[in-house]
Image: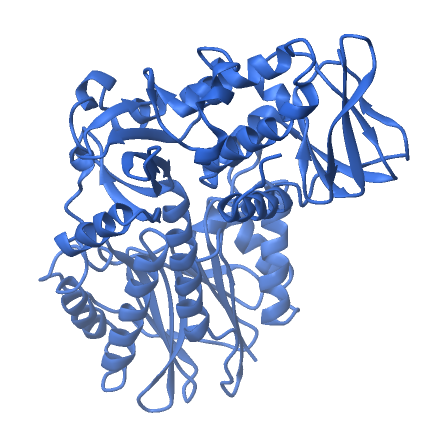
Length: 545
């Protein structure tokens, strides 16, 4: 029997590791000792992975006697003859002892081989296994399953009639001779896999591409044949990168890495790529087989998730829920719609022991918007240190951020200033949702409407502040973002609107600022019947004690 070489041993371990990951959450089945896993003639569309135990495979001689084909142990697979597409088992599998198995449907198994770059090794493994069985079946009539599986191997091992040696030399071509002449099934797997497959000659000229290559790159097969993989060159890698790649594969070592390629349309995409040198009978490189998996979406999702976490960290660093101011009960609440919101809330120390309160809405979401928020906050705090003129502060902030923002970024902002000495309030509203001053009776005493455009539109825009609003004991000021006023009932038949928010605050004016905020948010969510929140919600409530 032909002994497996070190390369096959490494492949077996790689396949075992991939299968353990693939079947981690799959349901295990337990087969009793001497029980059949399947019987010759049963339908077969599943490969089995042995978590523990042993399984023997049997076939019948022409005289009807059982002949042992193989014994498989923990970490091995069996039943892969189903990959030939026969639709029925051609051998019987029996548990030697109590055995735990996991099933892997054929399409999923093919996808695993493609994803983890194991196609070539799988072919070599099958070839060695079949060669090991030659002595067992040498005196038997030709086994149809072996012939069908032979077809599958040859489709991978031969390219348009040209031998591509992917097995150990000592196997010899005589083994392939009895396998048939076309090897359809695994060839169909290559044709049907979602990953691109390219085969080139030793000079790098393309001899074969599969349909997935056409779908992914936009190049038709006839466009690619005779060309080199340089048609996918994106310009994102320097010449040194490609020199190292070629040096590695020309030395006979496979290349594995992530490459930025370019489609026929000019669009770039990330490709997880394996390039394997294939040697002829004399040990010389005859072809290169490359498997490319488009991982653009995966990388973009990872980038997005990273940016969102960074943005969230930026916002959480600056966010303060409460602040102490004698004679007032103040609280803020922020309820982002996703991992990072576009709202901004801040308490800002101002000259003469005054307190600034800012509530805003940054256009967009994500890391860019978080940076805009951080920059707006920095400018606002810097200018508020030296002035109590809210109109002038917003004018300076607008001018400063316009030098840094993208044209698509803007900020709606309501800035209020509380003077605790004389219990008064001044505000400036740059395109933001109106704030409200409620009298001790719960009635609206003042609507703090927008007085100008949002920040970030025009560099010469001038902003102005309101008149001084006196504050009396028991009065409440509420600042909102549009996330709560535009909260919609199912099918958007009705919106929560400011009137419901004001009514709730008036009805619960005896509660603390923190209780009012949390209760208002929960009331709005109940109004929406707990549908997914579409926009960020931020609230500031302060009560005059």
